[in-house]
Length: 332
Image (cartoon, rainbow, N blue to C red):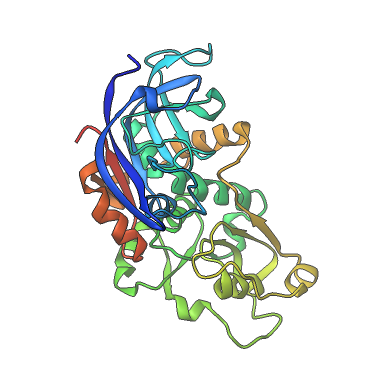
């Protein structure tokens, strides 16, 4: 079986800082050693995948490489008792799709410690509508909701048309929170209202450049996906004992901020590291995504593409022109 061929995206370094990608045939013996062999049925496209597929050495150091930080499918082989052939599983985070061949191929081989059994009430495809973006949104809601309850006031979500942001809007709304969505794509206001947002504001309205150490308290909590001035403004606008979660740096990795929101209003800033989330917490969040938080119309926030359509969608996400989630069906 080790010589079995399968379809996969392959990114190659053809010259100094020159990369190409193609859909080709790989074989199982090219996969790394691991405890669980999974036949991938669905994956999803994330910004990190687009960076890996473009040769970004900050994400992927070793080429040739198959990206895809998300994968869901069926266990084909397992050398550990935790999993058996036929089990439906999810694999996200850790090193998958970074330097370990990922979900843009029909097979992956990974350590058992990376694998989560698919929760009841969640299909393989639905798990990839969530993917890393949905799991990151879930982590953000998980930590925010420990302290901030729906009756405390409005929640701000930045980068709201992106994968993490759109799912955060939907999950928070499902949980009864009043959500204000921030976007640079005001043409997508209706998309955000359909997700459950109560208000939509332009990102320029969410970025304060006055230099004031504190701003008028507006938000009971914040799910930030972009960083930079927008995150700093959100922190300075958060009300007493509010919670701000931070998971991205698309606007900037820098945070122009002082200590006053923390020592005068007791604001908490919580970093979200979905890649290395402990397995016990990971399982609990997936159970919430499949249960109380499960969205009723997941097709409305996603589209499904084939491996052959990945290239054009990678370009869209790199240009910031993608909205919602992109599921990759390996059988198409």
